[in-house]
Image 1 (cartoon, rainbow, N blue to C red):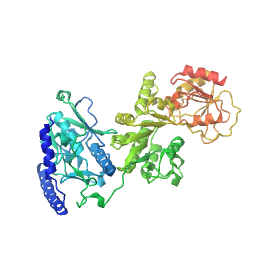
Image 2: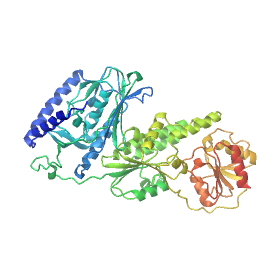
Image 3: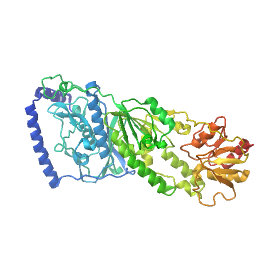
Image 4: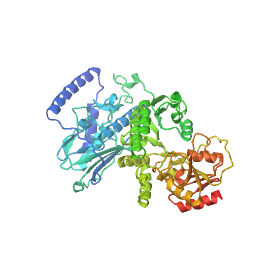
Length: 589
């Protein structure tokens, strides 16, 4: 409950009366006392302290017992900007350590046992910490916002509070102004609580809020409602940059810091010319750039991002090389998809080290997105996604429908990602401010926030324009999701010859009864071709179709291929052989 107004006023008056200008000697005495307390708590915890609890996937059959959210940004003064960003980085790091933790029934949860000591090596930054009545710079500063939220959620859920400490001074706008605070200081000032039913912690950052929830069996549902802490006054605690006490040994006028307005991190994967141009147009010299490997240095066109000058660069060449080798060695279908995802996860983990506290905006490749979201790196930041394909959950739905209609086409069940990863991507896409893509079908899924780029047409090739009227190209590979079955049916019905560019993934004998030839996609594969045909359920990179469009070769494709209806492009529905046959009759004459 909130304290009465007179009680709050008494706390304010007491805090003002007690505060004196700190001295270096007083600080040394304070540190000595802290060391004694830390040692005592360490010994006690070794003898009979609480355990560190593990994580699990979200318990879907559990109900929400409590939720508490607070604003991330509380101090808009320029002098405090870098410390605000440091606090948010600390909340981001700690929330990632808490999210998914399951507390067994009857067991004690300890804030510090789960979080561990905040250090730069573990990804924590410098924020503000309340010490001797002042907000001073400290590694891990700002974590009290998280402990306050946990304390409130634990109260809502009916937990037994085993250990809780109020702040010694009131911080304006914080839970201490309402008497609902729970301060923490490594390791001797802790927050501990117990529940008689099992509980799972949900901890995440939206763009503007810290959100803490507790879930448990439906029988333990609480009727309490979460609340948002609103700004309050008066401000009692002083910061070491704004208090005006120039005689204090801590005052930051002695070591001034410029305002930190943040920067953008571009974390990319495969080089698309459309995205390379977008990055070049939006980046600045203060930004950060991370890619799997320096393609220009190693002459790898696929990763050659010549996108401008950046303040910092990062790459993950070993993980990128390992991914490439694993994908090549894996057999087609599920094993190759698993190898690709595992390699991309390692690249994302390496590039995440570039995300220091001053990064306030991230422009990220879709392939890296679910891993960075799952590991808590995107919360509290503005996110743009360089989208190259349909969202995984949408792709799964389309393939599942097609497999239900054609159970004999087993490859429709191969191209899958783990459900947890699909859910992480879906949450991250919902969190994102903008979706950047040249693919119209992807853009239509996000009508409120998509930015549609123009496809980059390759240079026009000199090809023979004496097409054989019944010869078409299927850019493949020969797999159900690319429309191979529909193309085969059309070829048999119309007596077509097919030039194949990709490998056969549907097994030997798939093209029996059809006149085929193999062509190298690196040569003049469009010579004497009457049309390029791709009735795909999903297509990430329609580069062959763009080459045909630039060369003036007719195209028959689905909207999944990413080309809008225009001169030279005929759009047909997916998984519809009769419609494809009718379109080819018209196109080929």
